[in-house]
Length: 250
Length: 333
View 1: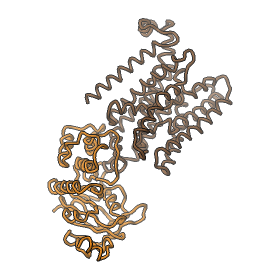
View 2: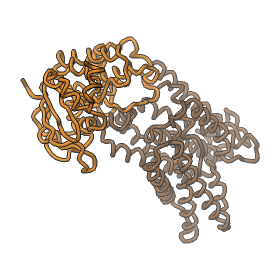
View 3: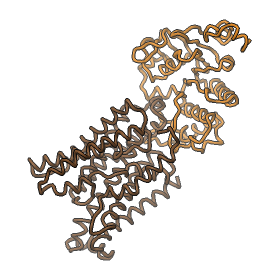
View 4: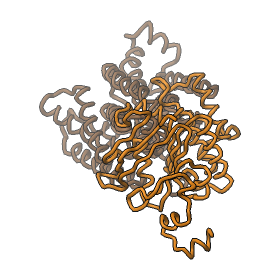
């Protein structure tokens, strides 16, 4: 299968200060890679670097077999879209208008949407099952609805790669399930490579094709959910004593 | 879409009505029949001279500069992603004012004449200096309310310095410096209008050209960057264009308060949108109508005594600012 995105010997950090080193992985179209690890391990830093917001310290990122650093920013935005943890408060924008901004890389000088653009926006809204509240003011919707709209915005960008940083942290169980269902379908049907970080290990086990564990500035382990989600591995990754692990998960 | 058409027609109509009223009302009311006659057939009659020398330049100064001010405020609000940003509260107008005062005094002393572009350049430098200072502070202080306090303080310092200059420069040539330093649309000539129109057109077209990235920027810096917006360039363009527009206003009319915050807010409420493509022309038209109305009040309310334009705009504009503060939830500023 075609590899959509891969990292080789990648070191990431802020202002030359290394946060995580020697990251390596590859994700094919339609696959989901999940980053797990304790708070502050550097999952967000890895995702920010992959999405081009931070420059890597060393190593390479390949997107569709091209060095990510050499892709023009307008072309980059057609290949990769993000859902960030940063909360946004756009003034007087409806949900549909938020989704419409995803067409940015495709529209002309004044950003006017063509019929084709509008169809893609509607399709994206249907994909996240948000048609019922698309006309509402974005700031008046619930957290679960906001996340779906932001996912729709990313989908409207028609990316090959989707990067999501803890997309379900604020959501209740119903909305978490709904969000992951949409994500799984999206990856399979539209052949998008998905990379996300999350703390919900139960969900990570169910929806991921591969899992990357980050701890103490290093990739601790990487593999399929079956390989990663063993009691020993999880206890070690999150520093949970055996008796507590058994009390809560055993 | 229908709403936009309706609102734009209403704005355009009020602009026309206020413009005609501005030509009609004054110390000598000019009947409408005389207006038409003097405008097109008899520009050399007494009425014609009042119109072409005094009322028309003044009305167009209010029209162009009011629009420029509202647009400048809207650009700054986009930059700071906050509706209480504006050239007056951030000290931009006062910085421009100080530089213009210095430039005028310098010019009277040594050159005996003042060139419009020289004044605009001085105002632009002043605007950029105070905006630059606010930006420096904004790297340390993230809260908008503190930034505004900082801007107001810069404003006071610059105003104090300007007052000092105006008080001690008692040459007869700069008698009108006093009026100007309080804010007024009077004393503009048709030559000035041509210069103003040219500068404002540059600002207006520039704003239109960055309307697309401005819209994406409303989702925040990170999302904008992820969609391919050259964020650094966009921010520089916003600062330069808003500085240019408010500099032009200050150079010709002095400081005019609160238009930059009040008008874009009213326009957002009326149009129920924040799309730059709609907001840019709408805020401009709204600023024109607002300033022409205020100027009409300034010169007629206590005639023959004239109020300074800021007195009137503050009465209508400041309550709107309070309203924005009350409406916004706690902790958001």
